[in-house]
Length: 467
Image 1 (cartoon, rainbow, N blue to C red):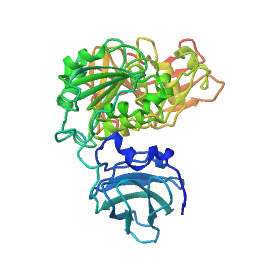
Image 2: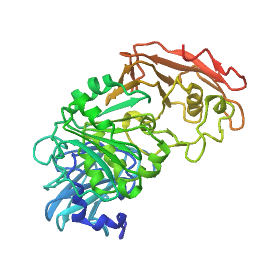
Image 3: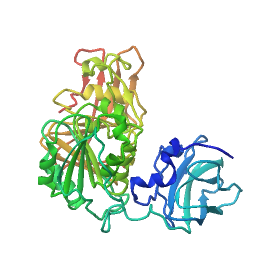
């Protein structure tokens, strides 16, 4: 058992952590929460959380907030044959209590000495599988509905804006309380170029109900503010220029994003977004908006960072299709991960400006670098696809969305570093406005076409993929 630990300098310990405001009660675990600094939360009293231990190295951290000294009851039930344990920690120091027997459920009561933030660590003694964690017996500032209700909507007052932050706000500066359905978030992917009015009007407006919008960039202007407010009827639209990591951890930025109902990442440089935002409070705040039932999304580079796998040309030239197909490990190919944790975007890589810049070949090479269950999504300019939490996507706009998947016929004929890529019978779904594709089950209203690449040839496409 641990006897000593440190929590990200404890962010000034206990009470200072409350400066981020209350958040929605969580009901499901979201990876990566393998450390206290990435803990999921808040866990609320009488609100069970579903989770899973995926492998022998997996540990799961959660946090909960209490208003005063109390006894917290902990219950951890898990799959038959497994043996999972729990430990409760304060913001710093050793465990206050633990459940480390072979019981199922593993139960116990822990006395917490004062109000503040506490942590639960779920670990395996043996086995892997699903579990349910429940805490009871306390009142906490972490409770609430994360956007429903009235007053400050559970996020507290807007913090003071830091001097280095450029921000532009139109509309009401107070948090507009909107009732959302936790776990029913939406995702909007746009292909760059001209924005798609219909996607904002038809997909975003009905869901956010006059709530607040935040636009994120590392450079640029506030051009989205009046445009988005006019299309959606939002209570406010605020553009934040978060161009350094210190701002990505600032309470003002985190509050603005967490309390929003729609977060839109503008076009720009996805490598810069990753460099400035990955692993920060801003990254977690974007995840929070989706988890509480809001919408996240972006166009061009803002689209690229939505998927688990991200083409990341950091310090290198952007790769063209006719270059990528010549070598699986071409010097201009770099793929990153570990940014957002949107469930429907796991095992996905996206690309934009798609047909206009002939990016089909490079997207297939990206997929050939990844596992066989990876989905590729290429979005044309002036085109968008909106996905609900159930994985169902629908297209708006003037161009096409191309979804690429492998099936039993797909052949990775030649996919080695230093050799031209030969990748055959990849399934391509070409979606136009109104067409649908479900990321969870692979169903679509359109039939797929088998396509491929043979990088040994000047005309490297097999079975013209855009037709």
